Length: 163
Image 1: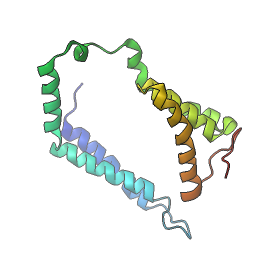
Image 2 (image 1 turned 45 degrees about the horizontal axis):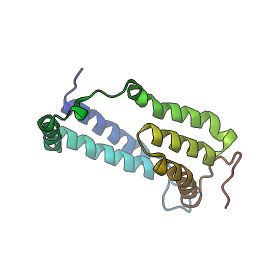
Image 3 (image 1 turned 180 degrees about the horizontal axis):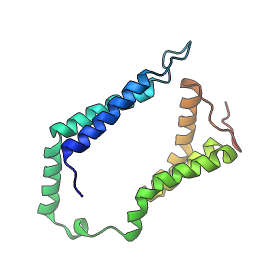
Image 4 (image 1 turned 45 degrees about the vertical axis):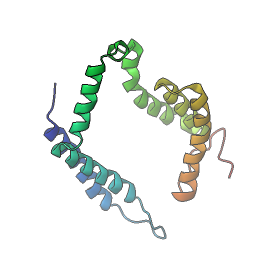
């Protein structure tokens, strides 16, 4: 079933406006410049912007050029269907979120996030040479952001954050 760009863009813009509106209603945290309203308002504003761009058809020309480029080259490797296991990749992010929900309190954020980043990187085609360092570095950076900038502690578990 195909939906028009005006409909999908309108729905995205409406959801963004709702996120922005309800985010703006969150109470500020005393003593902090950035409160809990910042993230929903930024995401909501981004969704409104993207939805309006979809409705107006901005960027459609890039899609048409890309499709024409694929058809004109028509290399056999571009037209081959994806392997069957790739059809299941859409279920990976929700599965990883469920894994985080059940494992983070026991294992802690650092090991849980490292496992998630490694699995997602490899599943989406990253080479192990990139996926392993990313899985080792990204959880520390994310934990540092939450701990120092947002002042939100993440689960310590087996391997608590060292500082």
